[in-house]
Each structure stands twice: as structure tokens, then as C-alpha cells.
Image (cartoon, rainbow, N blue to C red; front, side, top):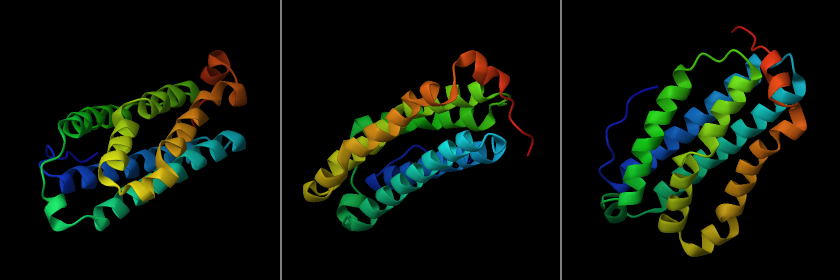
Length: 169
């Protein structure tokens, strides 16, 4: 994963956040391919990838809707801190040597319950016009996170997940 400089403006935060969403989508897409021998699991990862691509489009639409003055403004501190935290986590996730479905699940869990969605929620609630975010807001993000909480019910417990090996590229 490419290193990003520490965000200096709202525009930097939005560009970086869109990049994070794309990295997450690519990660889930890779898992879908590498677990193609388990079609239901592969479809699950593809669904999460699609959610992340939707998040990326949302962030880019916010970015394109803001004035130059707002884009050049200093970001709120919580966003800057969260973005730095996400960068570290994505560096770990993209370099991790996944061997089993359980490895994939654990990394996905770290990703979904990290600052990635916190950044997205902060962007939505602080930068989107209220009339737009009220129709979308956190229910969609919470639903996305909830998908991961259903993983064990859908695909078995930890011992079963550890027996499901990832396929080579």
C-alpha cells in the first residue's frame, strides 16, 4: 500500500479516506477470489467489497460537492487522528500472510471495527449537507459492520474457519 502524507486539509482527508475505502474494497475482492472454492464465502466477500466501493463513491461525492474554501480548510482533529490510525492498520492488513478463512475473518473484523468506519461517519456527519446524510447516514454503515457479526452464523466457528485454506493466486 502506498504511504500517504499526513492530511493537511479537508481535501486531503477526503482523498485519503476514498483511498482507504478502495484499499478495503480491493482487500475484500482479493478474498473473494482466493476463497472462490467456497462460493457462499466468496459471494460474502464480494458483497463487502461492493459496500466499500459505495463508501468510496460517497466520499468522492462529498469531496466534489464542497467549495474550494471548505476543501482547503483545516480538518477537525478527530479526522486527522483517525486517518493516521487507519493508515497503520491498512499497512498491516495488506502485508499479512493470510493462510485460512479464520485469518481473513480476523483481519476483516479488525478493519471493520477500526477507525475506517469512524472516519466515514465523521465525514458524513461533519461535511455532508444534513438533507443528504439523513437519508444515508450511519444505518448503512452499521448494517455493513453487522454483516461481519453474522459471519460465524453463516460460515462456521473458529475451528472450521481454521480448516478452510486460502487458495493461491
